[in-house]
Structure formats: C-alpha cells, structure tokens
Image (tube, helix red, strand yellow):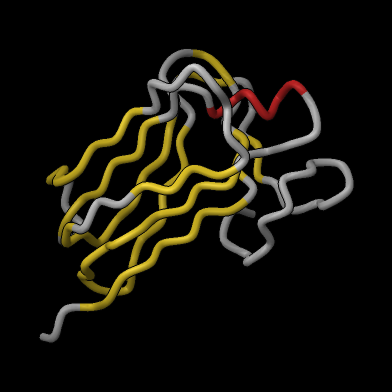
Length: 120
C-alpha cells in the first residue's frame, strides 16, 4: 500500500505493492500530520518483472501547509531503474506527491519520509 513499512518490491510474492490502473498522469500523495523539515524521502520500486520499470521518469513534489504551494521538485532523469531512490530535499513541507506524466501505471512498494516536525 506504499506506506505499510514493507519495502519488498515483489508484486506477486510480497503482496505489498500499490499499482494504479493504466491511466493518465497517475500519482500517489502522502499528507503529513503537520509541517516538517523533510530531510530524506526513500521511494521503493516494484521489482521482479518488467513493470518495475514503471517508475522510470517519476517526479516527486513537496507542498507546504496543505496548499498547492510547491516548494520542491525532483524529476528522475537517470538512464537506469533503481530498486530504491533516495532524495534529500531538506525543506519544510506537509504533503509529498509522486507521479508520472502520460498514460501509464504507477507502482510503488514503499515511500518513507524522514525528518522532524517544526515547533508550533
């Protein structure tokens, strides 16, 4: 389900990979309980078959205060597909969005967000 603590990307054996239908601009969003400094995000890919390549070219956006105020953008431009991507934004945010452009599937084994909350 992408946030269950299971990083096993094997869709058939692990049983814990989220997969969208084949659709236009598929995405996944995670809302934090409060504004936090996000120091690292680990995105775990589906593994074991050709659909593990479905994260190639993904983007990761961070928004602040529950609004659509984008404060960080990452786009995968590598030539290879990794089992895990580690991104280090070091920025305050309250929502993480991962997606793909075009008509395709989005498969995620796990998304881990690391950081610390800001004092209110």
